[in-house]
Image (cartoon, rainbow, N blue to C red; front, top):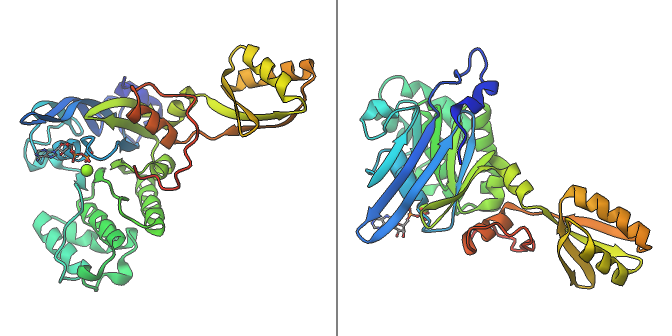
Length: 337
Ligand SMILES: Nc1ncnc2c1ncn2[C@@H]1O[C@H](COP(=O)(O)OP(=O)(O)O)[C@@H](O)[C@H]1O
Ligand SMILES: [Mg+2]
């Protein structure tokens, strides 16, 4: 289900991590039970150097609980977490190079953004204080650093939370739903910020139940449902595996419908709002267009309908875990579920 670290050998440069370096996050058989309730039911995942990794699932799926275990805030009932090969429960040293927050970051509302960071830097020690200016700049809060956090929007607080994490000069950032509750502009800012951090060489794991944004930001995802991973891998592969739905119009739709029904590789043929609809991969579409010409039903329009991560997500989380390639694209404008 997961690739070994050897898969990164091609990406390792002379100055980069050796192929044998332990991955930023390696989770195996992770379980958390609260009495009768199993919040996390055996999660395996691997975050590799340079990943922006999306940990996706609906509310209650076990994302926050998983992240708490990854950050060493609570002890797993079973299984293991390794961050750069170290167990996060093994003291502060084990969390070197790691930062993040679970649920919303908290600050003193009556103090300024800068003062809050100064207090955190003093607590962290070392040269954290020297990083305050850079962190504020990265999250674009330099202009507002003297303002009280109490007056900040939710998006500004989330960004300040990331600034606080940056004081620790992390190589790995673990962020729990950083974009949840943000307005569209706030979400766009968060997306840009995460891309900027990844561009600076940080590995990021972020949880989300907001799918359209992670689709743009993450290269790899795990989809978690009821405490279990139902998919882990590349978004591109996930989408490829799903095939694509097409809409078709021809000069003779009755004939075209018969051709589609008989064509190998073309499935789930139906008529929707007077237009033919089917699922196929590109090779099958090419052959279908040839067959249609030969039948005399000439194509006037044939358009692929985009399969979004939302479609895939719904098919994984609602059904029996098998992605429904034939899923109709959802029209819900809001990705929250
Ligand atoms: N401290 C706790 N005690 C009891 N149940 C908990 C606790 N924390 C989380 N849960 C339960 O575990 C499940 C997963 O919760 P959570 O990890 O917060 O999900 P998510 O972050 O994906 O929304 C939920 O059913 C939640 O009610
Ligand atoms: Mg949560």
